[in-house]
Picture 1 (cartoon, rainbow, N blue to C red):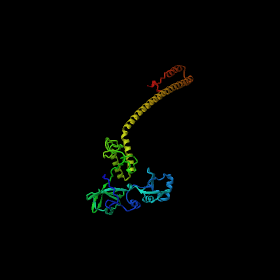
Picture 2: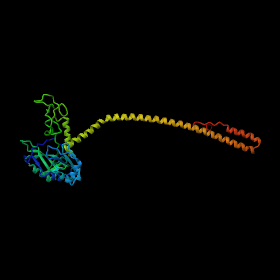
Picture 3: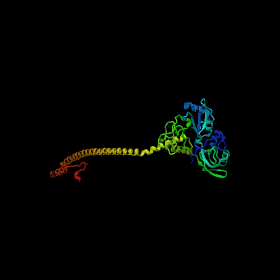
Picture 4: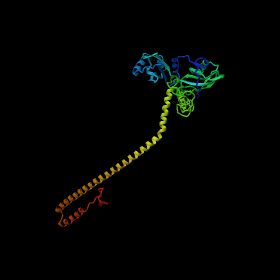
Length: 391
């Protein structure tokens, strides 16, 4: 990985900067033959000082259906905070049709592609400074089946070095570990830009050209005229160092955001949003153990109280059932006793009546005593309805 910042020297010399002569539409069509996740097309007001009118999405859809015949391949549309419209598609032909628009609902517009989503950037080293970049681009494209979009050479003015690294941007989000140039297998290195700061307020979130804040001192973070007399204090993290310190936590965080951007081929703003979202979730996880312990204790106490209450109610219910069962058993035992007693008395009467007609006077005197003995036995029952005599 590299954190080298390229020098933007324009197209003064063909061995300093190179840009493909293909139009954006041609490049987007060729990107369809490479690997990528999505193509994002930005639609802006032709007048850079104005924003696009925030129209009803239903009306925007109706307009797009009229001018883009592959509108079914548009995956998403959203209005940005900068007053632009971002269209997302995986179809190169649909992207080209969007790029070809010159007016948008009676407003003159300009269109462009977010190249970070469909391109990769890498560094190659030890390239002779007298090698024209156009020749280098041709060599890379022919030997490696790559489409070079632009090149920038890291060369300081009035430098006496014979070799220099070159930053190369190619179509596609997948690149090999090495490329072949001049019969040499040249190892490449993914390019990760270093954090850039506003030179007015020293924020990492925007460029100096759009900063509307007042100038501050990068040493103390205050507004003053003349040499700085105060102690160093970072305006970003409030730490005891100046705003340009590479050990600043905000600087380190911004470097991680740019690395995340490079690895995932997304814009800086999207990388910053995802990075903050991921760290917010991580911080919630880090803070969660105490809350989880407290919640677990609360749940345990409530569960124990609920269990105790259930046990008490269950015991009360068992006791109530036992009492009712005992009462029902006693009633049944009493009814059974009365029934048996009634049956025995009836049997005695039947036997006595039959004996009066068939038995001699002597036996009549003996039998009733025996019958009386059988019916005079006391019947005792326990709480369960069982005859005590049986035991």
